[in-house]
Image 1 (cartoon, helix red, strand yellow):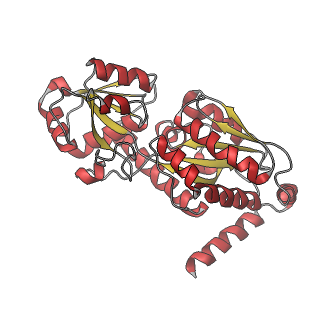
Image 2 (tube, one colour; image 1 turned 60 degrees about the horizontal axis):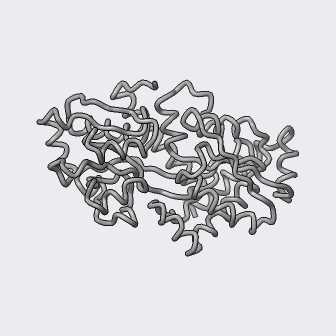
Image 3 (cartoon, helix red, strand yellow; image 1 turned 45 degrees about the vertical axis):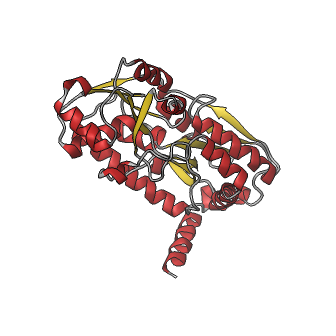
Length: 330
């Protein structure tokens, strides 16, 4: 009963906010969509976020009878794409499919960003969850996270690691490990791309790195890389033997995810219709299999309110890591 009342009150509150200037948007929401919907993806074509977005919206355009057109807007770690959505009309015809890295992590690292996830965007649906992978060169004499931590603690040879940029999921996660384990300051090497980082770990240029769950799979299967830990909440479908951080005594309090947002002020009718349609498709076995092929997990159904709470929690976690580590954007 409590959950029902909470949702009802939230919906009434949202509806009340649409009175007068927003009334036209509310009326327009009744028949949405009557024309193509632009889906901004704040990363380049071919990445994990883009691949999953195309899988999902190909299905949604059949559901709604209108095209859902992918518009890739890479740049500034997602800021360009999120800004475009913030500035779009709140009518349901511009939405964004993004990630934790491009939203709450970026916001934690750059508190002066012109886009604030919860202030400027309306959460619609969680579409995938999954962490990032801590990988090492096959010669590194550690097979578990505790072993690697002790190796880093005592041997300067292993006090260098890479990630795909300052403020990335891997960078902030390693900073959290450093803080939790009381490790000395060690060298972080930011790379522009994950494939370049994977190549250097395989070549022995750098011993340790945080990478995605796609690029290193072949090298792990060939024995050229070793997976040490994942920072997500579920093991990787293609790398099931690699344990989570939480299974190794490092219960990381945040995770990676993908999700859908609309501009703040979008009518609640549209948000609810889109939320319901997305979750219906996420329950289809074919789409769930496609999601697992890129080594992330389709989520269980999460309400828009629960998604909002996840965002609040993650933002607080990332901010604390950044502040404690005195991490500054490049």
